[in-house]
Image 1 (spheres, rainbow, N blue to C red):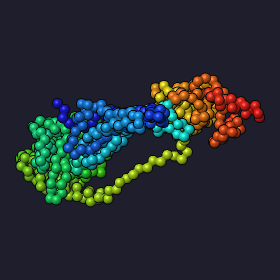
Image 2: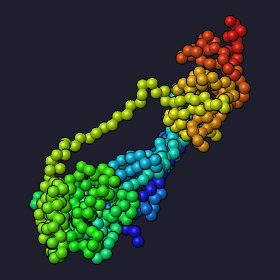
Image 3: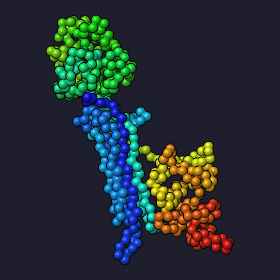
Image 4: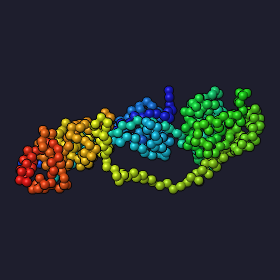
Length: 495
């Protein structure tokens, strides 16, 4: 059974926000005490957290679909709904997060590092929060926003200081077992190691980790053998140690040619050119191995490598090798030692960002997009006419109607708000801008949706009941209350 998984696809679904509550306070002698509907609770987030006790992504291989709990709806008597619980997923140190398009989102290194994989939806406002001096008793509330749904690729790259690379059966597992407390599987056949093994090595006062990477063969960078699957585990390493088999029984192989082939595969994989290298000539406890090590040592030194003759079986030369590794680690840590500071990334909204975009389509319709307007649409209960009117007022205040006019939209034209299947499509009728409070209608209803009333477009920002005819200019057909229509007719007749 698979026990080590270093690449998985995670389907993360955050919790939905709870809906706002529509409620009116009712007490003795106060049958209509005003709105008191609470807000909906926030949906739970899905968070990835690095845990040093986790070494594999196996849990997400078996259960790739993860969902956080949703927030609850608000209650009457000004009580907000409870928020959903965050879902915390533990991942190994060194996990890299990619989106579905392959773009890197986060590199989780260090115990306790946190990344929000999917954000929960905000809860909807209740009618108490929507009330104002002009809208005293709203008959609607906002819906909770859906939680974020994301498809993420989690890829584990081992966080080790030294990587042992080499042919299968070169003795890498035996070597890491000899210099650390790691106990990998060791056998006398190729590809015994199927997963990377980590071991902690102590050399003097320096402690570092060593990774045993499964054996490389010619063509590993193109996917042959196990190399392509595990070469990613050497990307974080400070230095590479070539473990060369000096006691191989294959007549067409020797340590120098093995080194050249492995270096060629590493070059084709890329990104490892600047890593320091050293060579460990293994199996010198064998007579043929000792002779081969003596024969090729000078050749390898001439190529610029530090060469050490070692034996994992007899432990000969291991002390010199581990202290040489420690010197490289100390030098690298001294060069990269900087004071860690918390980095805050600010991404302010552009000065000329209106929050929406209106596009005239070739079929004569118009499309309205933008994070703010799409969020408003998701919050709207389209079964409630007053809620639809509130959405129209918000979009008018934002300037969507003015932009539609400027782009040539006329009454009855099709307008799509949003993109894809979630878009809301309606036949547009121009309305007044932010003047819905002047329309008298029952709770939960909006007079603009009762019938073809005569309409006006606002010219000035502030309205005055005594001079309403001077401040409104006749523009379009739009729903209007009979009282307001009669008042405008009288004042127009006097003029």
